[in-house]
Amino acid sequence: MPVSDTTISALIELRRPDGEGLVVQLTSQLRGLIATGRLGKGRALPSSRRLASDLGVSRNTVTYAFEQLAAEGYLEASPGRRPVVTIDGGERIEQAGAVGADDRAGRPRLSPWAAKLQQADWPTSYQGQLKPLRPGLGDFREFPNEVWARCLRRSAVHAGRRELGPVNRRRLREALAHYLATSRDVRATADQIMILPSAQAALTLIAATVVSPGDEVWVEDPGYPGAAAAFHASGARVTGIRLDGQGMQRMPGLAAPRLIFMTPSHQHPTGRLMSLARRTEFLGASRPGKTWIVEDDYDGEFHYDSRPVPALQGLDAHGRVFYVGTFSKAMTSDIRLGYLVAPTALVGTLDIAQRHMGLIASSHIQEALAEFITDGNFLAHLRRMRRLYHARRDHLVEELERHLGGMLSVEVPPGGIQLVARLKRGRADQAVVKRLVAAGVETRALSSLAVGRPCDHGVLLGFAAWRESEISAAVRTMASCF
Image (cartoon, rainbow, N blue to C red; front, side):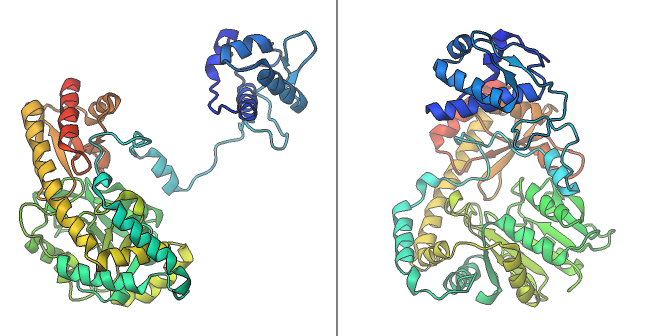
């Protein structure tokens, strides 16, 4: 719709303080208003004096912008007269380099996967400053940054002496093999371990390697949306499998799929623990060489109420399980390192695929992390965080029961870094989350993590990244929103 003189300035937002930057911004934004038809052909713009006053900039800034647009043919400018728009926004502008030109020939054609991503309910509020109780995070404020900085410095000093070529650094692979064997009962040699930029990169690599278009893939429902996205990208038919008290249910009436993705140690998002018997059932139902299982142990380091159940990978005697992990939960989110323990039969193929797809992590960071682990700093940090996160989980549960016991039913997970609180009164969780985010409490709607039609409504709340005083304040804010 055309706009009046009084609203033109309201449609323009100038951010950079330097003079040249303001001219560029103003020129671009006025060009866009003309190209989209908001400022129609024959329309006289405000005078440079008035627009400068409305925008709080110098008159020269506006004058230079008008002169540039006149040179491009958007405006006709005469001394002593207000500039006039000379282009109809409904016309196709063919001028090369015309930023903001109206593209009415059609929107870009997207792949089915990309179109599905745009429809997904990703947490767009998760931008900028962190706010309680954002799930999926550890407390980076408690990370031993000085120790980590020493590891980084030593890695940089020794960079010139290291051999070139290996994408996956041997020292880190050996350190990880030892750690995973002792802490998670993972059975793997260093050669089976691949270092990647993230756990999501590991899922992308797996999907590209063993999933073909049309293959069926089972994922948990509700579950981790990044897994479904990775398998959709490979052309798979993704089927959501509902949960029971032990996580993903066995489906004896269905033929085994090409791949099964699960988070058995702490189901995402509910935190439910899959029993040893259920894990054995899934292994027994999979066909060696035909059905693969991906075990994502994204926060498996944090168990509070009992000894952790051994990893599914360690129970597998036939090389059917991919084991995926990340350091972003246990250490700090900006480390950007994940890992994949691959079945022996696929190591060579995955190594080639990793290089061709460019899923390569910094060797500098890998060497620093190897030292951090071998010197005992990683285990010391984990022991401290387990005690801290355990106390924070219990505090969040107590606060929710005290202030929102009539509204929410809390599922207390045996470990992990987040929990689910279900709505008792049948409210739509998406609307609840919008109110909470607007009030300064960041959550995820449980229904947004559904693969099929949502059956459950609740909120996903993080506790690991937030101190007890922050948790208490956030819960009080939540109570005021219900």
